[in-house]
Figure 1: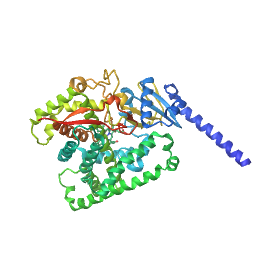
Figure 2: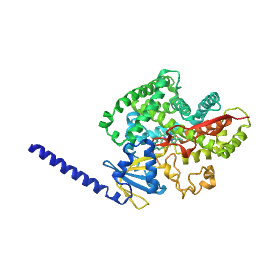
Figure 3: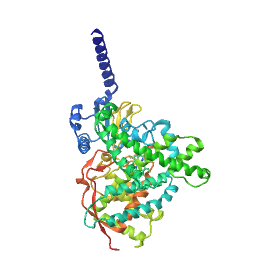
Figure 4: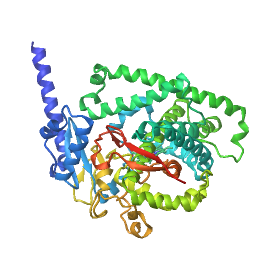
Length: 491
Ligand code: HEM
């Protein structure tokens, strides 16, 4: 009994000391406005991903520049002003992702998206040449082949019925990333490919459920919730598949070892195998981490971008007319496939894609952990160890930078109008040292897909962006998909 009283007293003293130290360390945040922990708890308890999305947006209406709250023992700040975001993103000191990304680690390990420090620097160095423009040119045939198939799919669908485009586009972006980055065709009629595609969809659900529900972020509660077993099953399918792709590629790669010395450009997976064979820079698990990272980052983001671009075009007839005029001038009614020069001539379409990514950024929120105290231009100090969320979706709606922010206006991205813009006011691909490595890949793919569709179809609106139920997810998504009508163009 005495022992129990001593232990309980020691524990109480330790807890009081711990909370005191925590409060002292994070005292500079006391000045930052924000909801109370109780408000926060009420706001997210039993909330769906759509409720959480709306709740955070509502908080930005009350605290437009930034706000803070406590999430159990973690101090969290949300930022949306370009000056504040610039201080964090442009620094090499704050390159570590916050603990929110830990939910991705069972799947992606510490690949390029989730790693930090020397590991991240070395991997970025190996992988940057894999997305060089010279290589992307070689991917054009693959983009063209798959977009031809996509158009055929829409042609076969009923003319009058709206189509939920998200699953169809997802199917195509998964096939293109697998073939371009891994040099492997996903065969939808093969059981293993089918299982893999399905597992990627379902793993996304598990990850987001864990991020959205605070109590699932701890290993023990996650384990008890039953989601752990679901995750293990999915990981087995996905990792077995990626390991097989790597082994198959390695076999053929060692057979053509000459590639290591030749000038021929290597695809992403070949680049990783080459780094292993020639310099032992990366082991088998490391290659697997990067393959999984690119499969994830390289398909969901572009699916969101293509789907929202088509939605915006369907809802803005005058914008659609201008794109069609541009395409007609380039292709002159011919059926030929797009070349790199054609894609570079699609300057108006490029402005449309940029404006879509402003209103509907595929990655709406990113997060970092502060590695040391940060003095923000707003006058507040963020102590070391704070979780910093940067709300790209809100940042892109700053009325001082983008007047009338909800209005869709591609001309915001004319050379004249973009010239004097704050460099961190528009960051769909993030910015600074940890920006998106696949940005040029994404633009090429989106342009090929969207132009192929508009050369064949007139898009008619069914859903509109302002009525879509957006959800808190890693990637911007509508809970109910995105529906559009496709009417064959009279050529
Ligand atoms: C429209 C399409 C895309 C958008 C809007 C986008 C956006 C972003 C953003 C905002 C980040 C920073 C994430 C963070 O800090 O947490 C990022 C990182 C990344 N993206 Fe993309 N992305 C797109 C397409 C792609 C594609 C096609 C690939 C691969 C081929 C790719 C690969 C990556 C990787 C590997 C990272 C991590 C980079 C690093 O930390 O060094 N992304 N992307």
